[in-house]
Image (cartoon, rainbow over the protein chains, first blue to last red):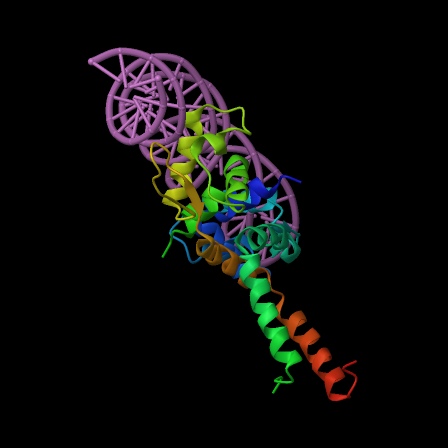
Length: 109
Length: 109
DNA sequence: AGTTTATATAACTGATTGGATATGTAAAGT
DNA sequence: ACTTTACATATCCAATCAGTTATATAAACT
């Protein structure tokens, strides 16, 4: 599934990352989300559309407000990709080896 | 340091991600890197410049070749950000609690 | 010295992006 | 009914992007 493109692109903007960080603390309305920024409301709406198309957030409805919520599961995909890429697996297995050796020597305390 | 912008933006392109994946297996020349793609050589060079400006790769020199290598440490920054964002810490602490409880009950086998 | 190999740089192009302002819509409040 | 509140949508603009072809550079090979 190649919405990895959309996810990483969505994450590349500092405003959008700030919005996500805010949403990590709980649902928020567009007005709430716009408040910290010196940006027009439509600009924020646009950012939210980008985030939603990337699958990182979702929208519900409460009266005339449209609260956004962070889709935490959606973070897993890019996170996994980075973990896979960045993992220096040889070094990690070396450390695991060392650890297991120490255990085998009865040195676990 | 807000090269998070540059890193995520660099990661948003499938060609660049493929290049990074290739470099995870070891250094490679531009020609090597270009080979799997139906793209011109300058296009690849451009992608490499983006990756380098994002701090994700670095260039050395060997004769007329300029081999690139992955800077694994550079992955940590965006990875950490995602981990922080995506972590459902309550749930994680709950699982840790459960695990520790089981240990306390002498149920570690 | 001239050619080949490996790569970078320049100039151009069409598409996308992030911002703005202006306007539309729809629910709530009066 | 009208106004206010909370948004979305439309249009425009300048900047950036991903690609191209053409050209430059620089080391290696003959």
